[in-house]
Amino acid sequence: MTAEAAAERSPVAPLWGELRYGRELARLLIDGGLRQRAHPDAQPVMLIPGFMAGDDSLTILRHWLRRRGHPVSSSGIRANVDCAERAVSRLEAHLRDFSSEAGGPVLLIGQSRGGALARSLTVRCPELVSGLVMLGSPVRDSLAVSAPVLSTARWVARLGDLGLPGVLSSECAEGACCETFREDLVAPLPSGVTALTVYSRSDGIVDWRACLDPYAEQVEVNSSHCGMSVHPDVYRVLARVLDTAREAAWSG
Image (tube, rainbow, N blue to C red; front, top):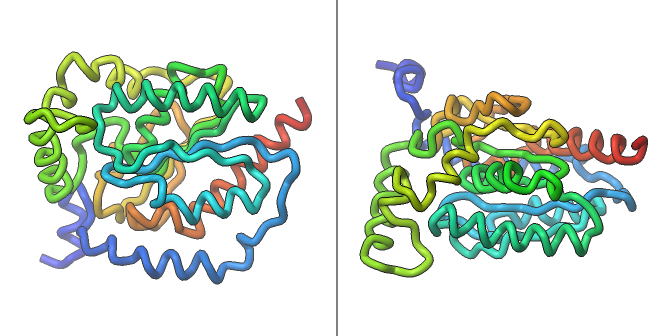
């Protein structure tokens, strides 16, 4: 069987495709079209990292946003492994503080699990959110991931079952603790919030079909999963969303 045929039959693309990250980052760094001038009226943005990642994983994106003039807040997450409900509760308090400080609603950008947390925040706090961007976020099925990632998640959950603080448990998948969070992932998004989901059929971590949020604009890129935070095509999509939101706020 060819590699292409295997990828077509598998729910997730081959994991080796994630080795593209370095090449994707290099393309971004030499892409002159992404060196944009700062906008003094750029809207505030809050970034939320993916599973097992921390705020440092979005450093490149954070610097790019700040060069555009956006006030940017990180999530305060060192490693995104906590129970989703606890994580959303902390993020909600952080979002309220940042929105108050910035003087208006915030655009949320979340990668992978971070996008799911951002979606939950959007459902719960629509008055604080101006836009939502989910990068490779399996909101339709959080377990639609590659076998190695699923195995790692189960291993992390066992640590939570043993009482390790700040770590999700096996109950989070279907138990009562995260029931509201799971409902947030299938709830209609607020009509006043611009929402976008970015997915890649060659994603080696997440089944791209799980990223197709029916309530968000769906944009396909040819990117690795981890590389979505440094892929030039993703940045062009983000620039379009941010510029459109700025123009809408200016005209309104």
